[in-house]
Image (cartoon, rainbow, N blue to C red):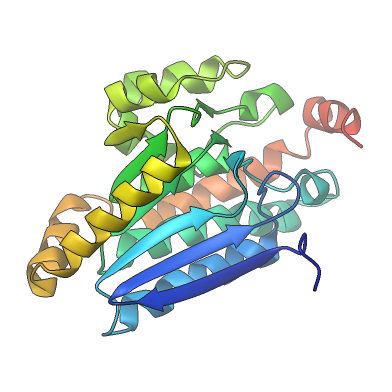
Length: 252
């Protein structure tokens, strides 16, 4: 068996659905993995056996390095670009619409689209190594698709700060202070223990109450299907700009 093959898998145990993704390139997410991730979240949302969802990634270093650079550098028309950037939009919208609480388990650094995924969870727990960065401006685009999710958690001030300062990693402590992380732990072992205990607690609560609470928390985001689709178009257009093509060529 290939231990470095990309995957999205789900493990269901005592009402807890653990959805895990992995890619050998620092858990970056190409289109096919994003589609699988959105589908797994939708399915878990519809499964009556599932009381709560834990979203995590494989490996111990990086939670998610964002979009797949390999796919990004090969975009050569607006429609391909729109479809590519819609991948993260579809996952964020699946998380938003899912009637179950989603706990984020963030073990390490997270960049770009990964910050969007962490922001779209309902309760996010991390290690002290989970620094965050929105690096999109570096290559001539911006965090358009993930922006609404990140802004909802960090506020406009926090989001604009990390989006403009595209070279810097911001610490897990900073992310906790701004409201992205609920708890920060010293090690992955402590994080996993805490996530498991918290998920078990949630399984003992009234599913109907949690469903109504989730709906309440996400009130005001009903237009995100259209909004994120529009944002994907902007990114799809910008990725074809001469500036971005030049920047991306250095990564080839």
